Amino acid sequence: MAQERFKTRGGFILASVGAAVGLGNALRFPGLCAKYGGGTFLFVYMLALIVMGVPILNAEIALGRKIRGGAPKCISSLSKKAEPLGWASCFNSLIVAIIYAGLLGWIISMAIKIAPLSMAKQGAAQNSAGGYFFSEVLKGGGISPLVLVCGIVGWAVMYFCLRGGAASLSKTAKFTVIIPMVLLTFMAVRGLLYSNSGEALRALFVPDFKAFLSAELWLNALGQVFFSLSILVGIMPAYGAYLPEGTNIFRDSIIIAAADFFVSVLSSVVLFTTLYGCGMQGQISQSGIVTAFIIYPVAITKFSPSAVLNAIVGVLFYLSLAMMATQSAVSMAEAAANPLAEKFAIKKRRIVGVITLVGAAVCVIFATPIAETALDIADHFANYFNILFLGIAECILLGRKAKDIGLVGEINRYTRRAKMPAKAFNFSLKFLCPAVLTFLTAWAVYHLIFIEHVKYAGYPLWAQAAFGWLVSVIVFSSGFVIKLVARRKRKTEISVKKLSL
Image (cartoon, rainbow, N blue to C red; front, side, top):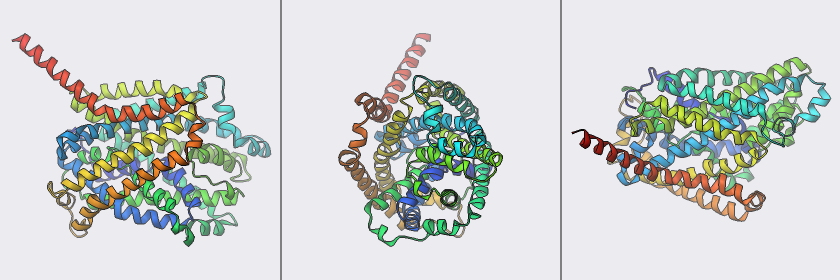
């Protein structure tokens, strides 16, 4: 791993922004703003970003550069017994990569279908667009050939992005970060031209002070920070290991966090102004899937009086979402690929090839009638429960060892003026982040048992076991399996050497 490096500071920033900026920014963040009083959610999110998100982001990047390794090696440097925790982080990221790749297949399918849907008679298009993907593209009765082929194409693209390591990641990010931001800006400008855009902006930015009293608001804002920045999932230590000496970690991490927040706000402006302009303001949803595959198709058919323009905007919009999904999936897979290659002394291309083949095979599920169920359950466990448990353990380790390994010194090693304040940094890692994550976990478990159980009780027991509990078992047992396989590999190599002598 140490042989790979980002060639430029800009390459590192773009790759890191690409890892942080994903579908959650474009689809889930605006829904949370709508649910929790617009400006109220923005304020709480920004507060959590500064107090907790930025310190953890700095810590993971600095640890990766200091140790020159991915999550397993970094966690092992804090405590040798904790190495399985690093592997659990890697495998959870790999599962999330598979989920994103499944969504990528859906998004590419919509990019193909949105043009004819927009070109249909306006009235007919608007009436059918809402349920079009699930009723027509991902229809029951077997495997959807279109979704399956699009999923395989997505994995093929991911393979070429992953095989080149740091160089490919930075090159890919030039397209997967810049192009979506340009299109979002265009759509935001168009949205601002609607006659009621002022009403939309007030709904987005003016805080609802009563919402500050909602515990759920604070918990969702805090959780969104951890998930949005791609921290606690093994990505940032890997990217930190690719950093050349002389990089100002503190400054660049601020740029990454600011860019992530900017894209979230820009996406919210797009969604609010577009839906208000189309008379659909009551349909803003917290669910990213509902937003992407039910709400936006209708909004795109109403985007302008010109069906041709609507078709072009629709294709570009879904291609942009595809780029964001690709970058997120590649970043997640990268978090596992390099540590595995390093641990077993195998060429990275072989590891990437295996990951691609396994991922493409699993993606068959996302082309079947059970796709929505599988994605909903797997995403909830991998992207929520697993990350919370992993985050608690990682923050406790970082908080206990940050002073001993001089983590603040590593962050500030190449800074000149603005520096990470040591006391605030250590307090955040040692006390604040573990406490908040523990509270989030307790709330999530309570929510699952007493509130969400009605929703998940509607899913078959085998589906809950296969896509939920089994996912968590694989993640948290992966480190012990890796250690066992590595030990047997060493014993075999020693036996072979003895025989050769």
